Length: 66
Image 1 (cartoon, helix red, strand yellow):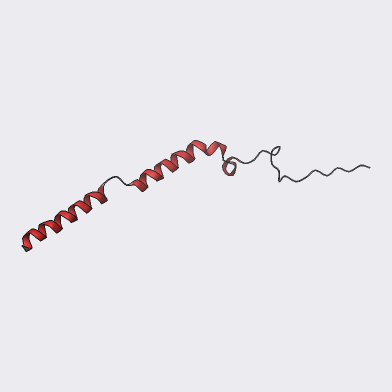
Image 2: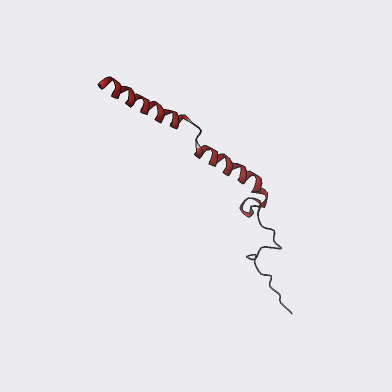
């Protein structure tokens, strides 16, 4: 009886190892995120900067009359 329970336990271990060795969903998510970032990097203001004409936080020009 102990031989068959040992075989059953080993089958469970092999099954778990096969699951762990399979494709990693985290790796796929990282690859997808990297691809998204590279595709949209030209639209990212942190990477490309903001043009001075559209920047709402630019310093205001002082107008003075003499």
